[in-house]
Length: 408
Ligand SMILES: [Zn+2]
Image 1 (cartoon, protein in one colour):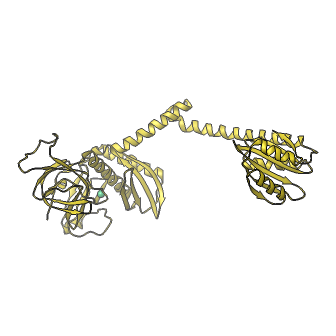
Image 2: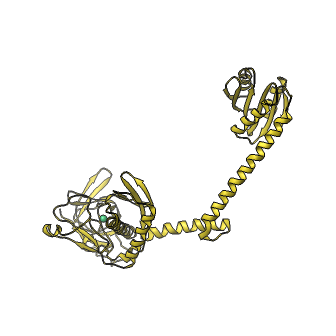
């Protein structure tokens, strides 16, 4: 059953009437074949169109274009080409022999035409400049990816982007060529594979010539703009992420709003945010350094104040495990017995570090873990862990052991 492919005659057709040649149920979907269609089936890297079939009874008549359509609306979930047949997958049955109005989701289709056309221009210019092939192409929901056979830098990608945008602004006519087999030999065109038989060539004069079955704008100005988002090493070459048209503009707008917010927060103009963040980072780094120095001095003072003591238990707060250890170590240099440092970790717990210069700390740590719901351990001279107990419970425990208790 041959379906007339109206989308190749006019890429701007949003709807057409058609007759249902067959409708077969398959699982929870129906396979509908029409005598003609405006629905593009998935192919050439371009996703299938979406839209709906409006089922009209034979005597129903047809609405004028763009008028509200009456009739039962059957969503088209997917369109695939299977053995040269175009299959419309629908959620409901449509009677064989009935007439339907096919209407595609035009905004979605035009977006895909912008993305696909932008990709051709970028791939073509890269091929012309570096000789690289496009070895992988994906039109995703978020962005379009192009995998190239060789390496390039983001700066080089940005040069390509600038040239592509100049070309787009030139409003060049896009041509579709169907050369015969002998004629084909005279064309130097891009293609993913060796082609024979009928070849459809997409010509963006001066930028690209490529075998493609997808749908494109007819004037490059319709693409509006292309934006390359990234260029990263991938397999043997690079992967480029890009956007065209309205999607590129929406992306730029999102980033513009983000940058404006940062500028406002830092009281700088939008083109000065990067420098302002650099300054902020430097300042933050210096403050952290100064804080560290203060901490060190505080710990040294604390350790010195413990000089001569025997067993000591120090309560503190806000120290991370590394500082808890350093603090205990500093005090151990000044005393003759055991040092336990407990830093309040959350409302019901403490980080601890316990040590002794000569002897074995492990029996005490084991007992502490048992009595104060703790976990952790270590070597004979040093142990670290967490206890889930209140300050009072911990104090009682160490008091009972004859420790002198300190707070810092
Ligand atoms: Zn293509």
